[in-house]
Length: 176
Image (cartoon, rainbow, N blue to C red):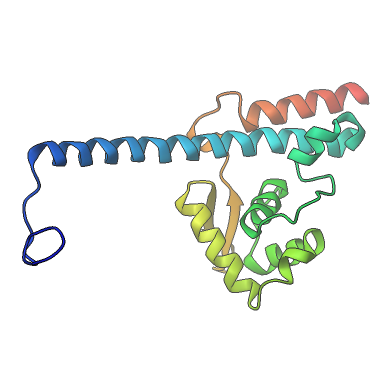
């Protein structure tokens, strides 16, 4: 007899147990979808702020904001997934895995030192970001996979990247 008293045979759970499982599953699915939407929005806002900082210099952003944007030297080492997110968010175009590795090496060399096979590690992280709906994968003109941060533009312009691009463009035009 097993610890659950079933003699190793599967039993049909009680209806109330099934309902609890269904309810928990629905809630988990909803939370995962909300997390993906939040990550997309965070990426969009970061891209807007990075664009403004690139136009006007990091001095327009406070120290706290610079740290949130990973533009200020942090006291702790950033994680590998976080570093991959930063590279994708800051890229204006889709990047191949090797291009992402090169960007990571330039921006986060300490993170790259911890990986024996950076290309495999980056590919794993990128596939996970696609699963989280934070990144998109497509093929370039040569049939190679390229990766890009998934912005809200793909789910409709709700003040997302298109609006952000318009703000950056308007501010840029006023400077001229």
